[in-house]
Image (cartoon, rainbow, N blue to C red; front, side):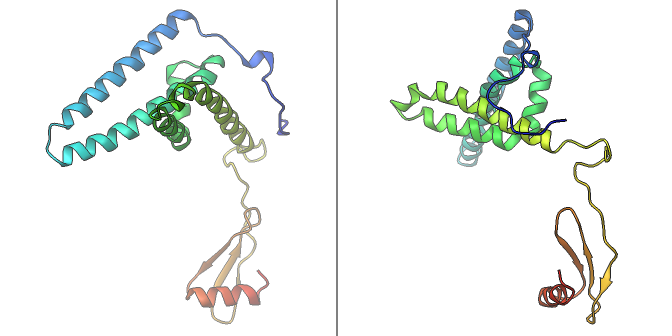
Length: 194
């Protein structure tokens, strides 16, 4: 697999169309979920003080996530993904999806800027999708190590005079230290050349 940075665009085989009937069904399902969720959050506002705070936070979180998922729908639908595949992708990348949605939600509240947000958000969603898929491509398991995304090899452990066991992880460069205080661990690492 070639992991070199790609230029703009996708290969012709990567773009697939979803039949119109499935697009309508997926949209109606998303609309029903959004209406049920917002109706429940609106009803939560009837509870004095605490209900309003929870409803506002919940509405910001869920509507931000749904809005981010809606904007990511554009690049995902072009790749022929159905609703369940899109949800799985957005759940895997929950925080970037939420960040996109909350940013769009808050920017849309600014009077004149709100008119420009949908176009900019669509472009941002395409670029975010590109970054997320490139990150996934770089973390895919290799044929040699199919069960792990990162090869970790332990070197033999050594003990210093204070009895601190040190083990070096070759790939990550981090040091696992056991026993003793932080100062003793740092000193032991320096003595052993880590």
